[in-house]
Length: 157
Image 1 (cartoon, rainbow, N blue to C red):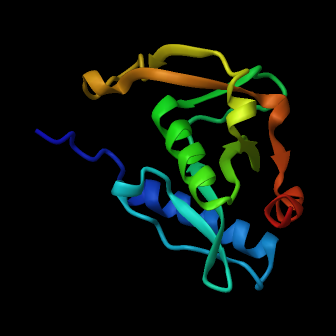
Image 2: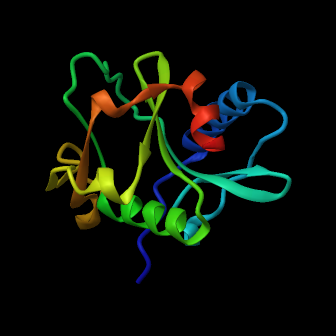
Image 3: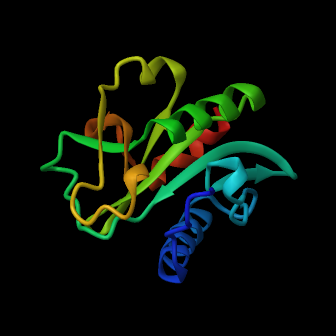
């Protein structure tokens, strides 16, 4: 039996807000795609002249996280794995976009950077919706996150 989809309209609206902000910051010569759909695992692609030049996973947590007080930001190991796979197959970088308190930051994730991430078992421990809310997680050091104004050069290079 397939796992129920817990993402709701508010979640999709928040993701769209981040996508719109990223679009504004990277300029009109790039295009942030619509949501890719569940089969791609990742949320969006960045396109230039209809060619994929970047992959994105967008996170808008329900809680305010302060990047200055966290050592790590965790995300599903499966999402990281899929992002790296798409990146290597298309020679386009993979980015994790995340809201921290009131700012949107990103991390460029590569096969090399991934080798240094702690992997732990965890997830939703309060209010778990089902057994799949606990899974393997990659812990990305928060000092690897950048402000969105630094994204455009990383797409191009």
